[in-house]
Image (cartoon, rainbow, N blue to C red; front, side, top):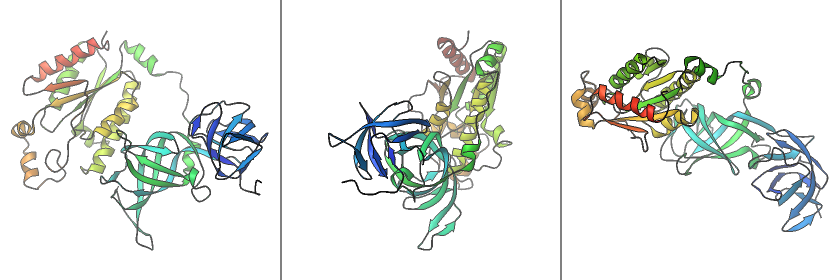
Amino acid sequence: MISVNTKPFRLRVDSIGKGVTGIISSGRIAVTDSVKILPAAQNTKISALVCNGQNVDAAEIGQTVELFLDSSAGIEVGAVICARDNPVEAADQFEVHINWQAKEPLLAGRPYIFQFGNLQASGSVTNIKYKLQGNKQTHLAATTLEAGEHCVATISIQQQVAFTPYQEDNPLGSFNITEHDNGNLLGVGKIEFALRRASNIHRQALDLDRHAHAFQKKQKPCVLWLTGLSGSGKSTIANVLETQLHDQGRHTFLLDGDNVRHGLNRDLGFTDADRVENIRRISEVAKLMADAGLIVITSFISPFNSERQMARELMPDGEFFEIFIDAPLEVCEKRDEKGLYAKARAGQIKHFTGIDSAYEPPEKPEISIDTTRLSPDAAAIEIVEFLKEKDRLT
């Protein structure tokens, strides 16, 4: 006997076979009921229900059920099927409560994987509004979150997610945060509400796309991302490389770490959190310049693999090339005309990469340049030849 249940029907799709399967998180459902699929906003009806291998006329909260629909358009793992006359929302930006569990701190702007049931979506914490401390939940200003700490934050996901606030429906309002590379659990979260701008902002259709801009310049745009320790030779090589490409008639632009910090990123310091935000902004600028048809050269220490991966994922396949400017720390220190390494070792400069802040070498760069072996001119020629081999220069 199905009990009376006045809450609206909701189910997140866990798997798709002949039908779609999930656990009912709210309400009840019966054959012939009208439902809506979100975020696709597709309306359909229930044609059959199966519980424990048996056809049933209805099912309710807590039961695992396989639904057969009149139309399966818009169905994908992670979609939510709900009552047609009382649908859930879908958004890509939320205010959330996060409980951080990892040893490494949570950093705003760093890319993570957000898991909503079996749906995995890339995203980031855009802002830590405040940490919560003690039984009275005192609000503390914060830019990072350590293991065991809680916070209220905003997050941005790279696709629409159907949800309800956690207080209304726990399963549809909760998520896990995991690492990009290995899926290790980093933290858990609860959705408070969708940000109003998530539903009010829409992409504007433009007559000229990136292909039109590239065609006008008669070249194939890309991003050449030079990374390495301070003193490895990034800026020198980037400058020579741009000159060589310019002499060949290519349309280029060089984004240099120091130059950008005089303007766009002048408000950022050198903590891990600020470094992540520094690279996030540069990644977006590099993408826009590539959309304009340019060959973009960036010269940034960019110490973290996760941020360089974020930059790569913004670009179409085959248009991002990670170039490791490789030089041992001791060589970089000997080249240091500004004396920055000496100041860092003396404790006069904090968060200096290679001394008291980590540098994560690229795992699989497209190009590695050994600057103990190659001059800047030779290194630039090697990069140009690589681009020719990849059919980026025609």
